[in-house]
Image (cartoon, rainbow, N blue to C red):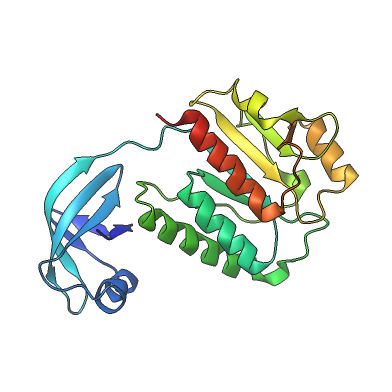
Length: 237
């Protein structure tokens, strides 16, 4: 059953915006009488389509209370990569339960946003919304505007991890064994060439724990998915 977010709910009806109506009618090719899901405020509304033109309207049939994933709230600080790799990370990390994203413009990031920040932010937010609908989440991760490494504000997180090949790093397994579901985690991942020594030094001075993912060295776009898979396994019911 198709799921959507962010629609107008009034009395016993759901009014779909133009973009979502287009998706329902022309992409999903739904017809009158079909049932769809709409998520709002931790509630899942089951609604039957009773109008297609000019915009879709559905009548609520049932309401279900849902809870969020029982995972630590993970904010992923992902250094900028090429467009396709970033899109992949936003999509798959959303499916794996990331709570929010902070794109990072590191010194060695190949891609520089410059005057494209707002356009990219809108694109990424659309990707995570669609991934949330596809994976049946009841929330949509927030994508924050891209920042420099020295602009990271880490005070609101009680677990701050820096993925690194530093010899002094601690294994991810050991760190997660001491974490709780109630933790707010910030996990920072460098670009293809890694953070510069000054960037890494600065993050460590801010209290980030240097974390190793084992003996294998992953591509940057693989790291986030590996970590979120491990977290899913560690905290699954």
